[in-house]
Length: 290
Image 1 (cartoon, one colour):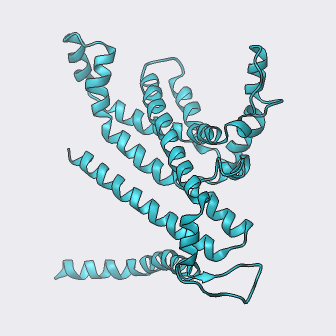
Image 2 (spheres, rainbow, N blue to C red):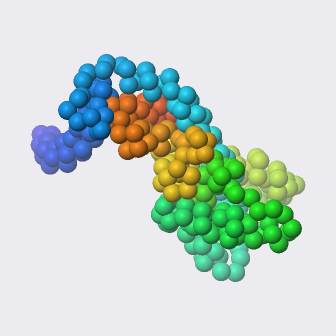
Image 3 (cartoon, rainbow, N blue to C red):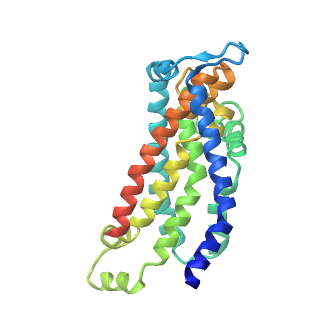
């Protein structure tokens, strides 16, 4: 009886925070759904009218949507490929005994704590600038023609910037998993004649599988909403070459002032993100059970 009373009291104490959280999430979502069914442009105040599914139809049939969807998938896939492979390599490197190991680890992890806007500005002005950037200086040093990365390879440039930010996160998670590996397993494998490659394939990578799955899950959820790096560097251009779905919704809302169309795009983006998250959560659940 006392246990039931305690549970009731706990639920009562948690109720205000839970209700506030639900209101914080549900009210904006309901308003977005409502606006998505309206023909609502900020340049024509007072002219709102019910449009049904017209906004969804225009958004889903717009060629820009398919370009943005492709760019979103390429961005997520490219960053995941770089961060997972690079994270494994850095984790293996940082796991080796070396002088100043603690300082090296801090320096490797540092980029993760830099604001996306700041890191994008650093890459744009100090690294990728075709006149005064570091990459241009290296190209001139080698007798090559400097490349305007953001103009000629906009999506690849965004992938490089975002991967640089998320590589420390992957390294940290994978290094933690690597350090939990029993040394006796590695010593036994060495005694059986296993070389570095065999140990990596048959011992280290299977042990890190769960951590790799966690990295993929968390990064994918955040990478689907990359925005600041695109806004600061390319503005989605040239054309739609570096526009992802998040930036497309922003452009619809704040550049074209089309609240109805942007709301429909936002709902589409939420649905797509939830579909991806659902499959990833099922994947990580199966991985943890095995």
